[in-house]
Length: 75
Image (cartoon, rainbow, N blue to C red; front, side, top):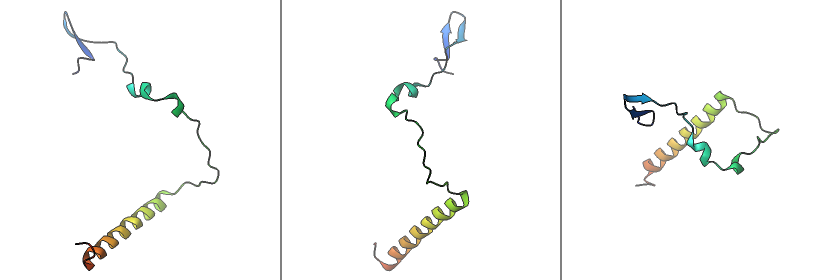
Protein backbone atom coordinates (compact mmCIF):
# COMPACT_ATOMS: atom_id res chain seq x y z
CA UNK A 1 0.00 0.00 0.00
CA UNK A 2 1.39 3.39 -0.94
CA UNK A 3 0.63 6.68 0.72
CA UNK A 4 0.36 8.16 -2.77
CA UNK A 5 -2.73 6.06 -3.40
CA UNK A 6 -4.10 5.96 0.15
CA UNK A 7 -3.72 9.19 2.06
CA UNK A 8 -4.39 9.21 5.80
CA UNK A 9 -7.60 11.02 6.62
CA UNK A 10 -9.77 11.47 9.66
CA UNK A 11 -11.39 8.07 9.11
CA UNK A 12 -8.14 6.24 8.41
CA UNK A 13 -6.69 5.43 4.99
CA UNK A 14 -8.91 6.44 2.09
CA UNK A 15 -8.30 5.84 -1.62
CA UNK A 16 -7.47 9.02 -3.51
CA UNK A 17 -9.00 9.96 -6.82
CA UNK A 18 -5.62 10.88 -8.31
CA UNK A 19 -5.03 9.79 -11.89
CA UNK A 20 -1.84 7.77 -12.37
CA UNK A 21 0.16 9.74 -14.92
CA UNK A 22 3.30 8.51 -16.58
CA UNK A 23 6.07 10.90 -15.49
CA UNK A 24 8.31 9.72 -18.35
CA UNK A 25 6.14 11.42 -20.95
CA UNK A 26 6.93 14.78 -19.34
CA UNK A 27 10.68 14.06 -19.47
CA UNK A 28 10.77 13.36 -23.19
CA UNK A 29 11.65 16.17 -25.53
CA UNK A 30 9.21 17.13 -28.28
CA UNK A 31 11.95 16.94 -30.89
CA UNK A 32 12.17 13.17 -30.44
CA UNK A 33 8.60 12.69 -31.66
CA UNK A 34 9.58 12.05 -35.23
CA UNK A 35 7.31 10.73 -37.94
CA UNK A 36 7.60 7.09 -38.93
CA UNK A 37 10.23 6.48 -41.60
CA UNK A 38 9.45 4.34 -44.57
CA UNK A 39 12.03 1.86 -45.83
CA UNK A 40 10.78 0.48 -49.14
CA UNK A 41 13.94 -1.59 -49.68
CA UNK A 42 13.87 -3.30 -46.31
CA UNK A 43 12.36 -6.74 -45.96
CA UNK A 44 11.37 -8.12 -42.57
CA UNK A 45 13.26 -11.17 -41.40
CA UNK A 46 11.40 -14.36 -40.66
CA UNK A 47 11.51 -15.75 -37.14
CA UNK A 48 13.22 -18.94 -38.32
CA UNK A 49 15.84 -16.97 -40.23
CA UNK A 50 16.59 -14.79 -37.21
CA UNK A 51 16.96 -17.85 -34.97
CA UNK A 52 19.29 -19.53 -37.47
CA UNK A 53 21.41 -16.37 -37.84
CA UNK A 54 21.75 -15.69 -34.12
CA UNK A 55 22.27 -19.38 -33.33
CA UNK A 56 25.00 -19.54 -35.97
CA UNK A 57 26.73 -16.48 -34.52
CA UNK A 58 26.54 -17.98 -31.03
CA UNK A 59 27.96 -21.28 -32.27
CA UNK A 60 30.76 -19.51 -34.16
CA UNK A 61 31.64 -17.50 -31.05
CA UNK A 62 31.69 -20.66 -28.94
CA UNK A 63 33.95 -22.46 -31.45
CA UNK A 64 36.37 -19.51 -31.57
CA UNK A 65 36.55 -19.38 -27.76
CA UNK A 66 37.08 -23.13 -27.40
CA UNK A 67 39.75 -23.12 -30.12
CA UNK A 68 41.50 -20.10 -28.57
CA UNK A 69 41.60 -21.56 -25.08
CA UNK A 70 42.36 -25.08 -26.32
CA UNK A 71 45.37 -23.95 -28.37
CA UNK A 72 46.75 -21.83 -25.52
CA UNK A 73 46.23 -18.56 -27.38
CA UNK A 74 44.45 -17.20 -24.32
CA UNK A 75 45.83 -18.32 -20.99
